[in-house]
Image (cartoon, rainbow, N blue to C red; front, side, top):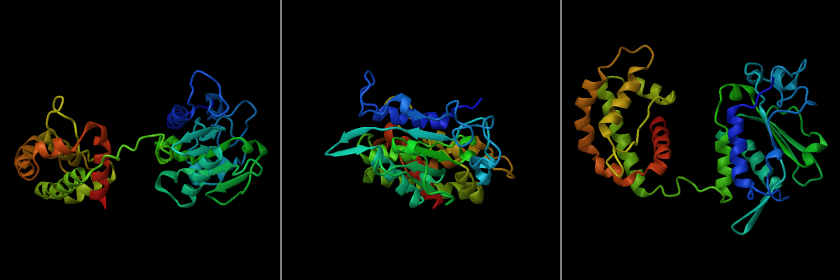
Length: 300
């Protein structure tokens, strides 16, 4: 039977965490669990709330895009969000402003919104509108006066792609979720610049320059920020080992003697970037964001 996929459950949990203010009471201004749905009820036949067991012949959620037909599984690929009102700072935010913001991100083709096929919503509680990436439809049923519907291309659901970044960005923008990069200082930027300068040298020493870009493109390069003991220095030799191991897995390349290469390259890295410099600039709270930013800079 139709399932709720983990990636959409993660979005549901995120929204309920920050928009259901009073978890112990039902309040009109809160987004309640019953207002955030993924799998359609028994009356649903066809559409993105249904998996392969409940789609119908010529179902628009399957036949209008190869992204859907190739991604059809038992998973539903939609999310409904109900009414809420929340104050943050000096402003009030609700389902209407949330929906308009999400549509604007889709219109702008924001990177974290490209898996959204359509949004059915009401900007004013009087008229229903539909933003459709495929430009097939412009409106929807009257039930969308009180909830907003998101359809995600089925291939993204099948792949389990993380859909929380768009919604995290919304929650961060209205001040409910702290920006993990808010403390990204010039010191952090300096560390990234040093790492970006050193890594190409390390790769050229290994003879796998092309492999570096391939590894980054495939998400294999991991600049680890694990600390050796509480407050201890970043373990750079382990980082080098990780980089070399990633490169060694690139398809079509002969294996690399990782320990020997790490031993040879560690002095070069340490000469240009000390453990103390990294330890002083990196904190566990932003380590992941720093690693992602480094990968983006290297791939640019």
